[in-house]
Image (cartoon, rainbow, N blue to C red; front, top):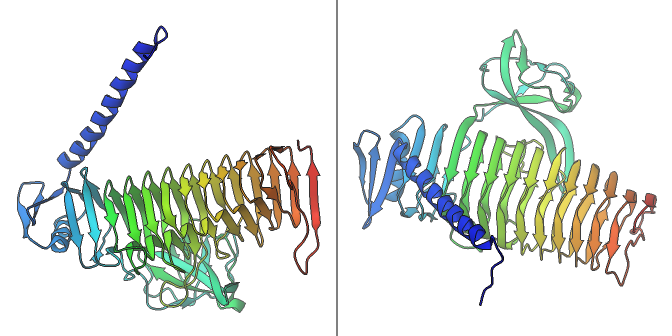
Length: 467
């Protein structure tokens, strides 16, 4: 028999009322989304109907992809609300600016085609313009050999032949900036350049007309299976993308792919079974992306890389390094490689804060970027945390439990402080590491194992005030 202390019954009653209120609020929010929709889509017995805000039917038929396309064409901007149902997307649909897709409970996009959605690359100019004089880090003005065809309000990707090598290929630096003024042959951009671009390295710009404000909410995306070359959504040159409260599963190549995207958020979503040998990425962040926030998601089952900064070369999307990625308060489980990974084509800063990592080959591996890695928990990973190449890393207030190796700090600077290491998993420093004020408990083997790899010597390792 359950015995309650005085006041407990009241607490339980309040909790139940709060739970009911939360569910009711969630349902009410979706109903309100439907009421405010500019277009509604429903599917009954195989027939899809699209109705605009005035009650006019703009499509009725059996082709789900045609119906979604008709819904997008029916409005210049606004909300498309999907009633409960499974919608088959058997061809790739082209997205546009200022569009929001919201699903009622139980909305599934069966992504037969790959990708199911894309912005396409039509916003990229087919040609580049040489930079006439060096554009230094911190400047907001770029002198060009010509401004013909450029427009205020569009974006530029500036790049040059500075390269970083990765897996036998050379990738070029670059970043995005918005044109706010044109005076003669000089363009003024909206924010200072991160890096310098020189004429001796063949600096150039490519104009890009960015799409903006695309949102998916409360929709489940189902792919063709982990072994297939399948992707849910490709975003090219898009600002302000949001994925919220979605489910994404059974894709081989990528779930969400971001190329040259700005100010994007993936939140409160669940990823499962995104895996194909050599290509499987839950969220692939590619080339000159900036300000990408990934928070409160659950990456739960059979991932290869759940989050990765990657690169591509060739074509109009070529060049660019990713900057400013925040990975916050997520859960990662069962990852066959790195759960969070930056290839050497990333630039500062990468923040990994408040996450939980379980049973993965590697939890986090970062190369050629500065990082803040704090308040995370790592359980039973092969290598919980690895830093490589250049970069300054602050690793603090994390909890490590039962990992094979807890930290491999091999970057330019690593400060490892105020962490708790429990039940095994040593630190394996090679160079430039400060290890201070940490707590080690329940150990039977190595705590810190510093040996140096072949061809290198131990350098600049400081170990103080640990318990």
